[in-house]
Amino acid sequence: MPAYVIADVRDARDQEALVEYRRGNTESVARHGGSFVVRGGAMELLEGEWDTRRIVIIEFPDMAAARGWYESEDYAPLKALRRSASDTNIILVEGV
Image (cartoon, rainbow, N blue to C red):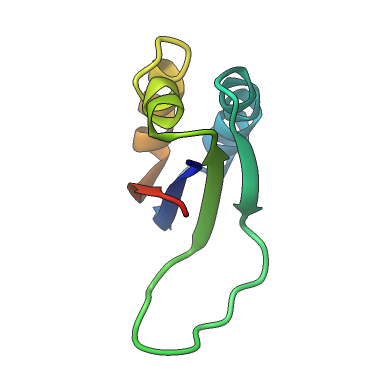
């Protein structure tokens, strides 16, 4: 069953660092069997309140593959880079 990592970027402080992060993360996600479904782009709030700057959705074959990417040694330095450059909420959800 597919699984999705959803990132909600609340604040982006260092654009140069985030460009470096995106470059490295593209390769890291692919190594773990993932692919980007949404990576920024136009957004339109339809209901409620949602103060976000950017949404990213990554599809993985299953929850284990997504966790494998997130907890991997190759993603660890990228995760640290992202955390230093932005405030981001990230969730993992199982698809149907």
